[in-house]
Structures are given as C-alpha cells and as structure tokens.
Length: 416
Image (cartoon, rainbow, N blue to C red; front, side):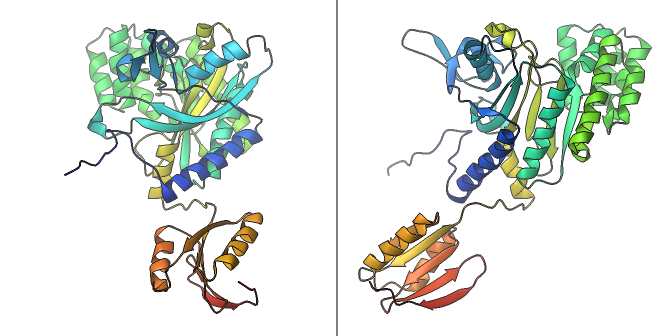
C-alpha cells in the first residue's frame, strides 16, 4: 500500500476557512499598524547564522534550524524577525537620523522540544520603532498593541508591562551568579515564588532584598502597584524604571487604552537583547502570550548602527486559537457559488462576469442534469460559501443564503 505524505512534526497545513480567517486577521492588524504610520518591510526567511548568534540574544542555537550553503556558510531559518530587521535597518537606513517605523508579517521557525505540542512554524506580525528612546515611543507601541487586538474582535485581554532594569536590579542586589539568576528567572516565570524563597534562604542575601523578592507576587496589577514597587526598588536604576512606567501610564490614559493595561514587575524578557520596558498580551483560550515585545536599545549596535529601538510581535496562531475558543467570529470576504448546466453556460458566464466586475467573489460549478440540487447545497455548506445561485433551464434562479437560511426563486427574462 502506498504511504501518504504528511507534514513533519510541529508544522501543519492551513486551508479553506481557517486560512481565510488568518489572512483576514493579518489584513485587519496591518491596517492598524499602517494607521500609525508604519511601513512594510520583508526580510529573508533564512539568514547567515551570525544574525541570530548567542551574543545577539535571540533563540538558543540548539532550537534553530541550521544548514549550509554551497560555500559552506552556516545559515539559519529565522527563529525571530527582530534581529533580521535590525540587520536590514543598519544597512539600508545607515545615515537616517529620524525615527524609522517598520511593520512586517512572516513565519518564524523554532525547533521546540515536542513534549508541549507547540508548533515549530508560527506566523508573526509586528512593528519596530527605531531611533527613539522615549516614553512617547513606548506608549505608542503599547497603544498600537491594544488597538490591534481590539480590531480583531478580542475584548477580554490584558497587556502586562514590566521593566528589565527592575528585575535585573533585584538579581544584582542579591549578588547572584548568572546560573543562579537563570534558575530564579525560570522560577519567577513559572510564578513559583515559594521556590524563589527557598533558593534565597540558602544564600547570603540581605533581608531587604529578600523582602523585595517576597513582594514580587504582589507587584502585579494596576498603576497603584508602582508606588509599592518604588518603596522596595533596590537602587537608582530600579527607581528610574518605575518612574518611567508611571510616565508611560499617564500617556496610555491619553490614548484611552488603560482598561487593557496591567503592570507586572516580576517579568523578565524571553530575549537577551531586551533592555527597557517589556510587555506581553494575554487572553483566555490560549496558554501562551498572544503578543510579546520590549525595548532593545543595543541590538542595532551589533550590526553597526548605534540607535535605540522598541518593537513587538503578535503571534497570529495563538491569537487565532484564542478567538476560536472565545467563539469570536472573524468576518471574512464572502464567496458565492453559481451552479449551471451546459444549456445555461452562456448565461452563467455573463452573470459571473457581472458579479466579478462589482467586486463579488463567485465560484462557477457545472452540474450534471441528473444530479440532485441537494448535492450542491451540501457542497456549498461544506465549503463555507455564503450564497448559492442555482440556474434552472427555465431561466429561473434558485437562491439560497446559507447564513440566514433564506431561500427564494427569482424569475428572469435574461436569455441564455
């Protein structure tokens, strides 16, 4: 028996209605990014491995798909689009001093271990604001995330904001080695704060620092938690981080997005290149963040352009999962079905041309005269068309609207 081909583990085919929804979401989100003045950029699907090397702070080398070109150079499928854009900007906009606003949509490839059942190919849509280190730039990105998610139909979501300098200051004040800090980072990311206290109890750490770690679970919520965070901020850098978050909060109120904003001072970035505020958007119906972002003021230096930047990526596959599980309908362009016979073919082509000239999508399907109409009705429902026009030899059209269930017969004087 011939073996059927199937996809490798961690990737899948997306087709029909699901594909239509995905492309519709991309279009909706792209409209929001364009409305803020962002311009499209496309970078290659694979790059030299050095673009994502360890010093860049992207995905770990063992989770990348690597291969060689004919000359023996190591290449990698992009696990993350931001370093690619940083590389492109450093080359293409080398002398530009004004802010550069770019947006993109593309697939990323991460060779996750399979135990979590996560996809290894994901579609990301995002934006990068390059050349500005300001609270205005930070607030613009956050407001754009909220506006974008609302545009997709999502209502119940929160954008959690933290700051690298706050959590890093805690680790420094505790005098932790890199491996110890990494252990704590993992415990905090999993919200295992009992584990954090247990680790710190076996270390020579000042009581004030232990108290700050102890309070971390409480430093999550509205803007009111920022004063509490300020009271335990270990050092000037952490204090400045909190003051910046307060200023950003004031601007977000002007944007009218405060209802979707929370602060979480326990957050640490999942990419090593983050330097300032970091943020993630969460909603129910998916176990992972639907948006990840943050400030990365030193990333472009690695490619030869010394300029601050901030960006985010919307993980489209996670967003689709959430919308689906929350039963939020995404309105896509409607398709119509025109069923005809040999005798009505001339008429059918004329009708189809008229529909298409008016921007309507219409699929033509020639039927056998002996086939029952029910067969075509079932096909119409199965393929998610909105309306079926069934041309009869007596020059009448039976119209069925699958969304409303309405059926009617239209008499026409048109000739075949």
